[in-house]
Length: 113
Length: 114
Image (cartoon, rainbow over all chains, first blue to last red; front, side, top):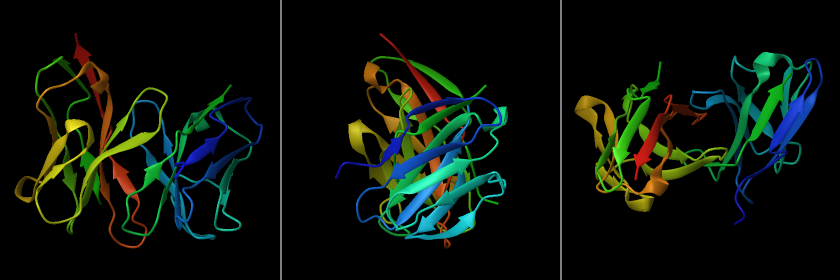
């Protein structure tokens, strides 16, 4: 069990650029969640997958955001036309099933200049 | 709507002193409750969780928490704080219908004085 991994750990980009983050969940975990954490706040839910199906998206997830989990394993989160307000820590978590504990990765810190 | 309140933004304690971090939740059904710890630049590490049963739950690193339904609280305690406990602590409630997403409080930052 190597834990949840995320790549990159840090990303600095200019406003208007596109960025993509990757999350590798714990092996055999069916559920994968994305959260966003801004300075001084707790994480906020963005979206989640049950295997490869994206089952819920938060209203925080504007149409500039898209997430995929094509084979039910790793997931990507893409932000198009980044804005300064997108600067945050993006956290990924996985769980074995619906009621099981979510295990979090180290996060990707995005800074939009 | 479900919510979690952590009334204390910052807490400072001396090393060796006892600690209690407060957490109040608003949730209609039986809550699934969690405490996570986050060190600077790091992800969230689970300290303990409550799903059902004994209302006093033990966690890692000597932490415990008590679920009090009548007070809608799930306070985190530790009898003797170590300098390495300095971090940010988050209480969360698991939404128990379908998504099972977590709703987090705003966190309490703990400072430990030597």
